[in-house]
Length: 246
Ligand code: ADP
Ligand code: MG
Image (tube, rainbow, N blue to C red; front, top):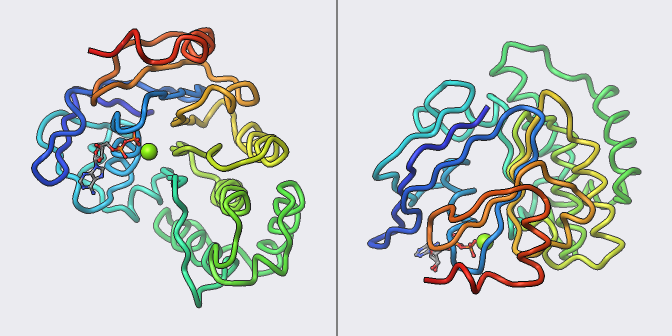
């Protein structure tokens, strides 16, 4: 589904990703772990199409298509979703209107009919209840006045509503207490499926106790230095990243 080959990315004058390769297939959940500043968020942002990230070498194919030839909204319509490490607040734009607009824009781009207001609200109620999000809160501005935990649950809510095929989740566990962590993990687990894939970017192993990855990668200084199964995350938890340090 996603094929990253020797990707080099520059931000300003600095090269952040230095030849990163990674292949993600449908049905898989890949955890990318690494210390602060390794380039984890840079990877997420460049895949989503954020401005200011210059690809200097390498390629990324999404379902065989050159990802970088697509505008960010086209990537979303093609089934790519990014959950932010730091979700943005959008005052004046209601969460629900934002989501319905995004969902219908993506459907339109794919040549699908719009979702009706009734259908939309049925799904909103079910997903919001599953994630412990208050409906009144969802009528307010996007993430406005939300706690850190509520913002992360709102990301999981967006994921559930938009039903992408590849979810790139950047530090979905940061700032969560254990109960909220379980709720967000539950959302990610409900999202998993044979036709979908997840790229789970995380600093800590604890999220992986609740969302079991199929593959684990260690990202250090812009490169994947080691890959393995879930046991690799446990080893990193006890050893830290020190043994990979140059
Ligand atoms: P991680 O998510 O693994 O903690 P990031 O991808 O956020 O790491 O950052 C990797 C490196 O890139 C850091 O040294 C950071 O300071 C730098 N960086 C990230 N974004 C920018 C930016 N917009 N401008 C300049 N440097 C940046
Ligand atoms: Mg980061």
